[in-house]
Length: 321
Image (cartoon, rainbow, N blue to C red; front, side, top):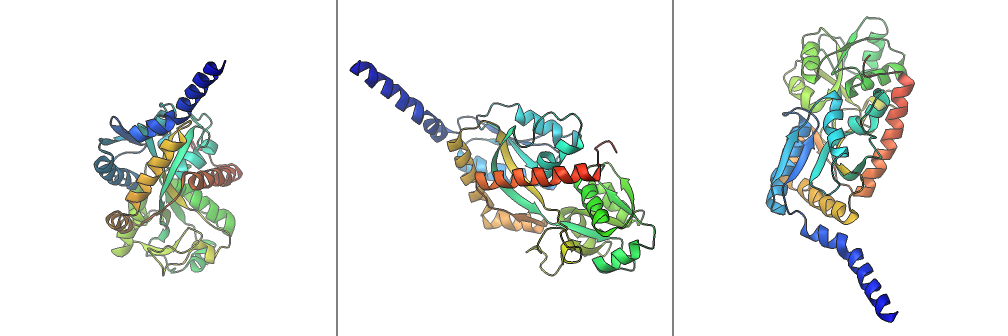
């Protein structure tokens, strides 16, 4: 009996340290970073920055794979169904994980339950811009003008963060505008530049080049506090109390990943995000690099899934509107 107990104790000890041993050996083959949107966007650029540095430091190829479609649902669903061994990861956003569940009637995954949060990567500087032909220079002036003039706002499609930002603004201010959805952010920006639509809420990565050239006028940012990248630009909430739209990117794995492996990946990603050259590249794009723990990012995920999911349902927005 004593020998049996020793054998049993030894077996249990081996099982207890097995995850740590697996984590220490990781990675033993190439890693895939799935981006659920087309190449060239800010999420894709961030993924490629991470892949370059991870390939060097981890000693294995880290490959970016674009699986676009259905507002990020195709690529995200692919990762949700992958083996939770750390070799298939997702570079997702708050839209795929906190909004789509309420926007789509038939979702291929649960944005919270089917993923392992690894690290919050970056916060997009989300902007409120208007065509410069409008005689307004502040959010307050825009509200007054919009209440007496017919205006249209552009979006990258029904249910996009552009759409939700504007719908939130309408609800908070009582302003009524016409929604003009496009197939993506680029045409939405171009038609606002051309004054076919007058207002756009969109990432600074898309709007700031046109602001700098004078083709768009920047009124505010949508986060709860001023962006360190644009410290002199007010928030919408300074005029419209309670208004906030914070758009983040994050790294995820499938649900059920080994905690030791999650911690290893999180530390490596945060090390890369702290590099001055990475922070400068992202800052030049209008994106603020974040630092987080897996638990901290998980808390953000749960909070925003509840917040924005409820908001989408309250506004009655559907992806097929």
